[in-house]
Amino acid sequence: MNVMQSFKMAIKSITDNKARSVLTMLGIIIGVAAVIIMVSVVQGSNRWTQEYYEMQGTNKVTINAYVYSGQNITEELSNYCKGISEYVAGFTPNGYYGGSGIKYKTNNTENMEYGSPSIYLGSDQYSLCNNFTLEKGRDISPLDVKNENQVVVLGARVAEFLFGVSDPIDQTVTIGGYPFTVVGVYAAKDPNSDYSQDNMAVVPYSLNRLLNQGSSSFSNFTVKATGREEANIAVTMITGFLSGLIPNGTGDYWVQSENQWQESDEEYTRQMSLIVGGIAGISLLVGGIGIMNIMLVTVTERTREIGIRKAIGGSRKSIIMQFLIETAVVCCCGGFIGVVLGYLGTVVVGKLLLDMFLLPSVGMTIGAVGFSVVLGIIFGMYPAVKASGLQPVEALRAD
Image 1: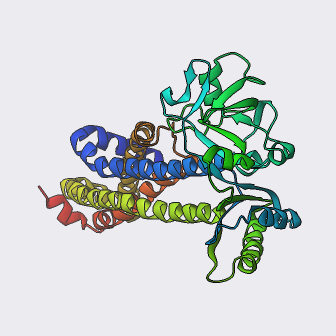
Image 2: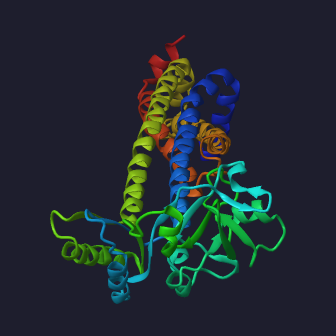
């Protein structure tokens, strides 16, 4: 019997026993669909995390440093970072104004749908350090910081709320009761997010005393490194500098590369993919056991058929091949149905959990189907060998 005849007999066997065939495929269908959905969602979550880091800006170094006496170390730290330009591309203090929102004529950002914007105090390199790009106008300049110019750069969402389609450049807004000139607008990062990074504005950090009515010192800073490896070197060098600037007992500090969080998240995702894939793989294993049980029942039911084939000269090899092909066809059918359900499930779950349009990778899809077929053949081997080992006389006597 050739391979084509074996395929035809396999298809006939499946169509003649539709209910049994569906139940046999069920474990494979569930297993393949589960593998595809679960791994795709984990990968989608990782992609969302990476996109978030990219929006925030890569190769960032976060510094928290303060002196108990209230000494302002901003200038010393800034000058040191400028001196290691091989490793540091930008530096900014991170201040925050916690007062009322931004007002323009009758518009007040405190009435925004998603809440009043965050108003940050930063240097002329704030946008570089935090991955903002200008859409119009100009950025904060070193002179703005030096001269304490009351200027502001608006995030895209704030500019749209205050000015609509009008040009905001050179218009005057009010922050904390003080007039500020709008000199620029940042391009939108994530306009569709409820907690959009575009819901913000930046003013020169030298205005901290004016806006916050207090000390002009800062304790939080962001450094933009020139590269991934350079970020680690910058952490070491800045830590060493701060150890001399802030002796033990006079203050505290810590320096950390945000690449470490990114790498940690990537490692966590890899581990989760393996764990989730393993859990889903158990479904395939159960499906394979189910196939073996059904094929053993099939061998019992077709004992006379096997006896006749052996009596007229059928070889053990051809009988093994026949049952393995039937198993492979069942697994392939179940695998393809599982792929369809996996794709649909991935789209639905991705939208519900991550609000993303997810599709499984081609490699993972092929791997899931291939693994299901291999697993089916492995579990189908015992029934096939058992069938081929039946003695013709005993098989012909079976009812």
